[in-house]
Amino acid sequence: MRIRELRKQAGMTQAQLAQAVGVGQSDISRIESGQRQVTVPQLCAIAMALKVHPAELLPMPAAA
Image 1 (tube, rainbow, N blue to C red):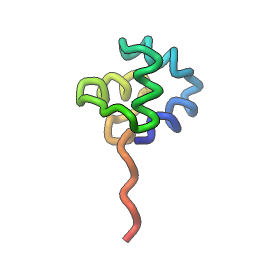
Image 2 (tube, helix red, strand yellow):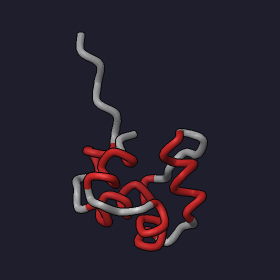
Image 3 (cartoon, one colour):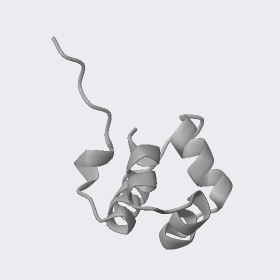
Image 4 (spheres, rainbow, N blue to C red):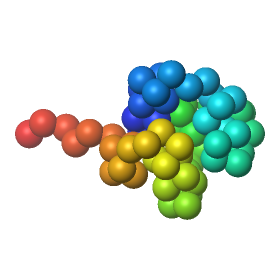
C-alpha cells in the first residue's frame, strides 16, 4: 500500500493520521509495514484523512 508515501506527502505523522482515522498509532505503523490488513472502512477513512481517492492507496500494478 502507498499509505506511508501519501501520508508523508500530506505532511502528517503516523499519530496524526491515526487520530484522524480513529485508530492507534501502532495500528497505522503495522498497516504501513504490511503487518496488519486494513479493512475497507479503514481504507476509506485513511483516504479521506489524506484527501485522496481510496484507489490511490492501493499498490501500483507491475508493468507488463
